Length: 214
Image (cartoon, one colour):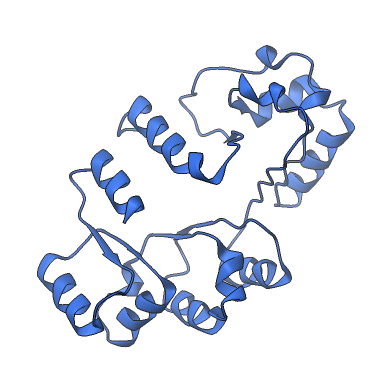
């Protein structure tokens, strides 16, 4: 519900539907048929119920977001998740977020994602470096700091089709050299967010600041 309310405030022109249980599946189905939705937010169990009842046309899904993927498997939902993903079109955008990269999560990435890019965000003891940290372009960072041993790993992985960001901030003396405005062409950016609770507000603030066209 918090996710639904946050995004509906930013995108009032879209219809959101939340199916997280708490009521009979028949009531959920009737509500969805009555109101519809461009974006469906739900638990894997209720999403699977919608698929099983033929409520949603999964072949028309363009974007799939899986949050806390490691918990799906810890709670024994691997079979349902795989069945749902099998119903989705191969050509889609998928965002998978997980606190840990377990073997099950890695298997899901290999089976369910095409040309995946990995972004690993680690914790560092010196939090003072992150307080004034701003997003910077990976390509520009490569040019400025290709000599850094840790960043050579990023370059190597990117050539193989996988991007694993392991740059140590303490190795970067001046972040100001690599910060720049949002470009007009597609560029890979990443940004550290300290806590789980701050991730969604940060994303919403970014969308509000940059406008719908971004």
